Amino acid sequence: LLTTLKSQQARWRAGGGGEARVVEVLLDVGQAGWWVLADRRWPGTSKANLDVVVVGPGGVFVIDAKNWRDVRVEAGSLWHGKVRQDEALDKLRDQAAAVEDALATAGYPPSQVTPIMVLAGRAQAPIPVAGVLVMGDRNLHRELLRRGRLLSDEQVRRVTSTLDVACPPMPPRRTADGRVPTATSQYEKRG
Image 1 (tube, rainbow, N blue to C red):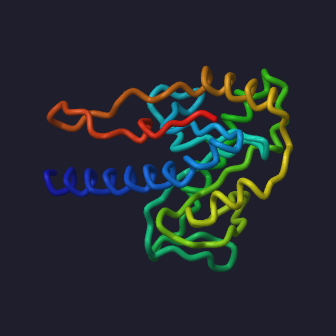
Image 2: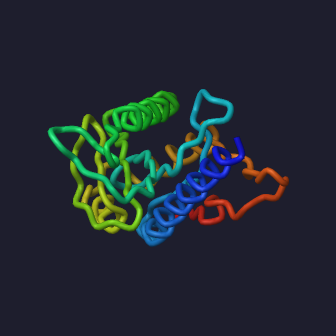
């Protein structure tokens, strides 16, 4: 049991590092009218989180950060090592659908919510895989800004306000000894 817990803790730490790296990459987009909402509650759940939601002139993006090294797209499927990642893609599409539902009250068209899986520490051009855009964090900034203007400044504010309520910040995570580690939400930035 102790070995399993240590292994799980190491995976969480690595994943959190990936989230933090992706959020750091996104800090610059705040100056271009984008809002970065990190470590938010998944709408309709009590404990599940969304790594990052980004709202800006180019639309709404639900981002799942992965700190994976051995990743490839082969025959239309995403692989991490020898494991096909259909469940990870399903989960991200479900997260984007929950954000779409939350935005329906603001009159936001669901076709403009884009799920993106971001591979931390990688330069990987965007590849569509089963309805999800998969890319390296080094390509994320450029991908967001190339989208052009789909939303006015007022629409960006309204959508962000709706998501701030529908996807509140997650409470700080605690370690087994009750300490609060550095959270990715410290990087939250508003444009």
